Image (cartoon, rainbow, N blue to C red; front, side, top):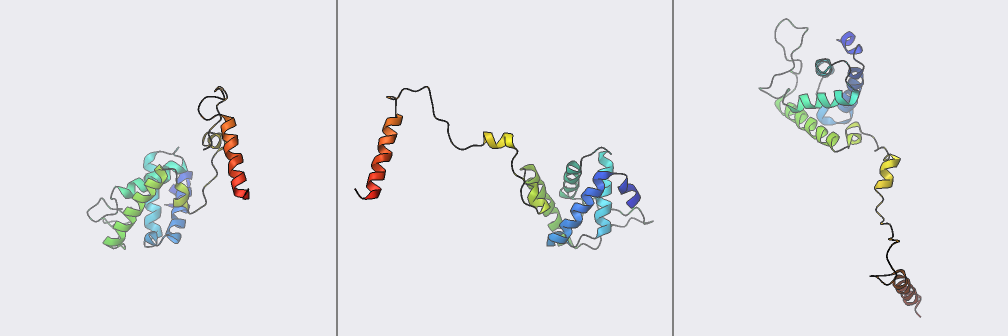
Length: 169
């Protein structure tokens, strides 16, 4: 298994991410390492060798979200066993449902650009080109005449009156 996974760079990255997830998130703790590695390798190898780590992680969560681990689902069969054996047989029905729901939640977070929450890290700052567009302040209109609407002179008078009132004059 490890030899096949090492040939797929994204597979190694996703296995590391899921190991971390299994340590940080109690819902994922019951998933044994062999089942997790088998799951990741099957998802990534069936998706193609040139898959990015982000796409590979999303594919793994999509597979789990679709009900792969649920009772009555397709299951995760161990290729090393002669008979059909579920590699995740140690999971209870409740654990299977919890992991499925958690994978669905992770997919929603990824879809809404909040992968940092899935990875357990601080959000990255927005790129400079996005920060400039997202400025909440409005630009002043330079083409309007001072007499239209609230001109700058009127605003200035209001501010001066407010200052006088706050000083107690």
